[in-house]
Image (cartoon, rainbow, N blue to C red):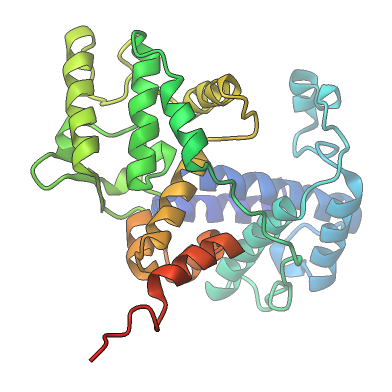
Length: 327
């Protein structure tokens, strides 16, 4: 182990103390370990203080050229994971992925510099790659109705997924937030759901709101679920355990195939909520709070992708001449 490895250890420990999610910790660690391998093997750099801007720019270029899964932080893992057998082995790494790496590296060196562990900050002038944002897909009314009709409500897991799908669509919650809801988080009088800080991306308590129609669906589901399963989770598995995001995503793909839509995925439900909220006259600031974004800017970048037809419909609602009060 070199000094830079210990620096990464310290940084990850710092992030754990800040109570960052396991997903974020894993992303930081994977990025930094691979970058450390590059620094040691290519430039013989063994300390964070020796890293220069040029090294980071060369690494970015290396990422663009080398392809997926061609480098690992621990060679022994190749014997277990066989990366060369993957269909996308050596395929181009997307700009989005590379930008995630750049972001993680910047966070690490900003931490090192701010805490005076290094004298110069090599990421000061490093910028992310220009990347055209992918528009998140939209499910129109016709296909949304088809989707809701395709569930077999006589089966426990499909009835559960049916309610989950409607709840995300009605509240804009993330999938991970939805699947860990407990019965005592739901207030049927105020039609609110408390998302505790430990379950949210921003690590802050947040409330989301549901409609009267959704309230009826939730009550019916809970009565059904409680007849057959004992579980603290509203949306449990057939064994009563916590339903994982990956399981719901897999199921959702199958439901999409049933209605002839192979390209739909669960995040479209959250996107549908956001777009429909804006199209109904909701404001971006309220939407940002409901979605649990860190700032309005994040909301704007993620969901302000209204098409010309959307804008036409919005205009018809808010035409100044149409709404002029005649006196």
